[in-house]
Amino acid sequence: MKNAEANAKFWKGGDDLMYEMNFINNCLYGLTDIEEIDDYVEAWHNGQSNLKLSDYLGMTQDEYEAWIQKDDSVLRDILRCRADGIAFGEYHNMTCSEERHSK
Image (cartoon, rainbow, N blue to C red):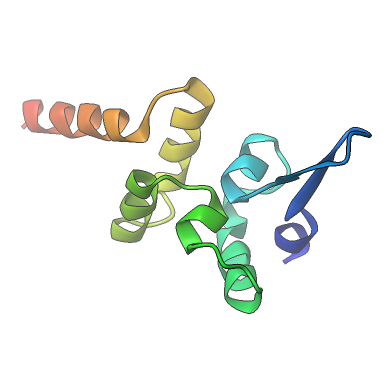
């Protein structure tokens, strides 16, 4: 759980603004690895957060539902969409459409 708790909060410059960092943002900024998601889930279970798990992890509802329904392999797709500025729902619809056409 080295990064999950240590990276839970990020302080920006000297302006005293606190930004909540989450699993998705930490992955995008290279502060944590995809394989550490279980540590974040455990930290959420053990913490005092009032957030839903999806919010704690930094996932949209579409992203969270895909992760729950599939497995951790979808995390790479979620991160790619975030990095490229593509809504995960649109990406998911495109890939489902491509799968139907290839059959």
